[in-house]
Length: 456
Image (cartoon, rainbow, N blue to C red; front, side, top):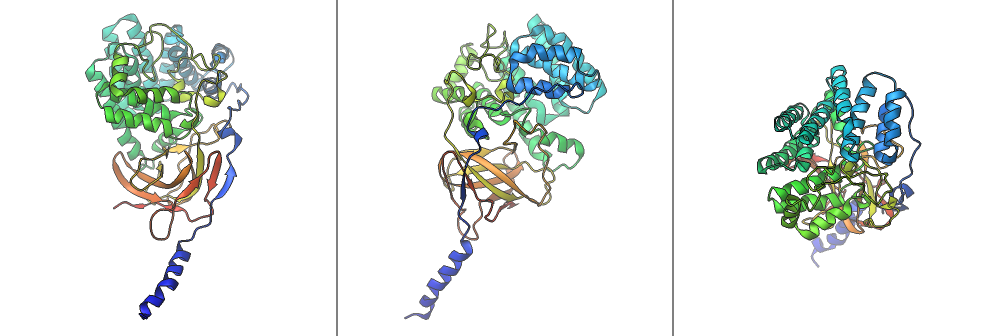
């Protein structure tokens, strides 16, 4: 007998032992992830008017008039009230067709900009209202001036640019091919800026990065963004790209419970060419712009599913906390998911990391689930932006994905450039696969973390 052959079984056993990882611990998913939203009390601190506006936007737009009156009569005068009134006016105009608030919103935001010139959101919000006011008046020169103001705001705060030109073009009945192309290109520029923010460690970049995820102010920011960009890509003739955006919208972060997932699925079923034709003909409403007079919305309306708690969907596409489990008509579908919860070690040299994670059934397959940037999984209790974790630290992640065997991959980079990647840990061989079960968390936090390493 070959003496080397006698070494194979012990060597195999040694390697198998080295590769062993603790089995996942299966836990029932917390109730708040798979049931109707638990609505917290409406805030009423006059020194924190922003909390009242966010609550109204998240949970119940039937309270809008009461919130507006409260802002006028009870909120403490000053910057925070001006900022909050400007945002509330924008919400009322875009979501509830309260066009009488255009002027007060523009004025409140002007005062807030003067008091806090470093808040890069404010010029974009104000330019949006100015542009919409000009559109409604049929003022072509004023509309173009509004677009120019939004372009300037985008240059100052590129990772927030989606709000400006892109959302405005979505509903502009007169948007030509050049504007549609510009709106799509702005998103590409946003992605580059988003990635580059990860490598900036100044306070302003840290603050901006903390808002670029799914958290209380925008619970479905990532699915909504992907749906909007799918529409834009379809209108620009980029059909494969449109399908990728819509697919991601259905599987990113908490999209399994998102109120607008059925509309996205309908777009995938129709196909990009038919969607583009329907939008151009005014027969389909573009995502993100559904106020009265927008393309595809000749008359005002309120989403019939939520008894007025959601308006027309312009803002609530991203900003409502309500979803499929909150629909009293039971006409909204959800997707069956389980969750993988594990740990990852972030790389040194990335002071503001916003990794993307993918749940994959195979090494060359399409992801079944995405965790895009940072996400707060208990948004009904946590209202703060998501802070950047320290480089080199071990942090938890959780990703929602349909049942089945999958592994988790991570990526940090700028747009298509991959700087660091990671995989669910295995000492040697392929990544570790986890059996995902519907309605349960597969907890692998007791196993070795996946470690982000420099990409080849």
